[in-house]
Length: 98
Image 1 (cartoon, rainbow, N blue to C red):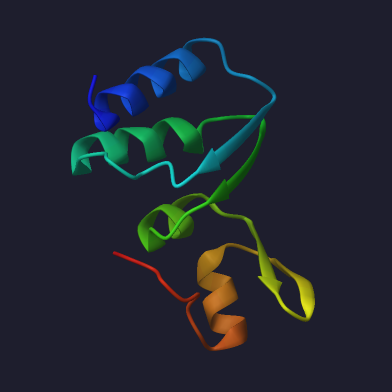
Image 2 (image 1 turned 135 degrees about the horizontal axis):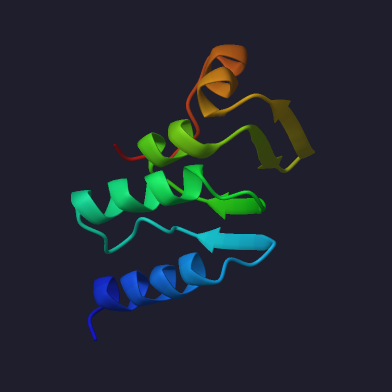
């Protein structure tokens, strides 16, 4: 299976029998646009807790409700989603993609 096919299979299995906690590392990597939108739609209906790392600003804006910023000075917590984080800090997180 390709990277995208493996990602789709894992997502399908998780959506079939959802766990209480999801830890996602770059979940939109290797996904085409249609699959990425399907993933965002499915995760927006997820009732458990999600912790994710992503460089995809669309994914972040659609799903985040709290931002943890890790810096050399420590961990900074921002309530609200990624859009609110950008408004409060005046900057986007480095390394983001559309």
